[in-house]
Length: 113
Image 1 (cartoon, rainbow, N blue to C red):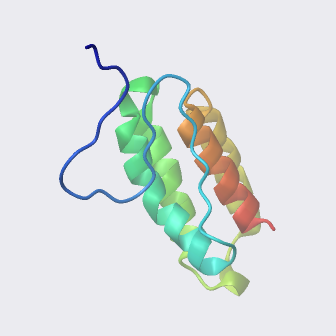
Image 2: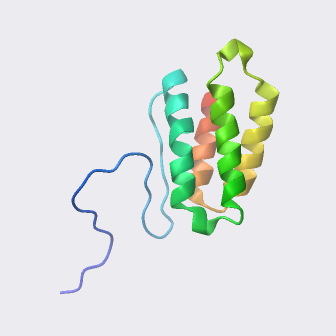
């Protein structure tokens, strides 16, 4: 008997995870500030998981850090133009990896909804 597919056993892992060909992620943590903060916090780990597939992962990490830094400010102090520009730039950097593209789109939707 031949097995195919993916098997994950033992231990515990947290955060967004995708496996296999054409894998996608649907990140749904509900709406609001908590979901936005969670996704911004999880994005660097997701970038690390897919770094080998990115042309310049260090720049994607930098953009993700800038977004997280801006989102850590009180809403009334956030620079919405900076957030928009950084998220747009990040989306361009990670667009070749579906899991990252979807997470970035979800974060953008949460920030600007």
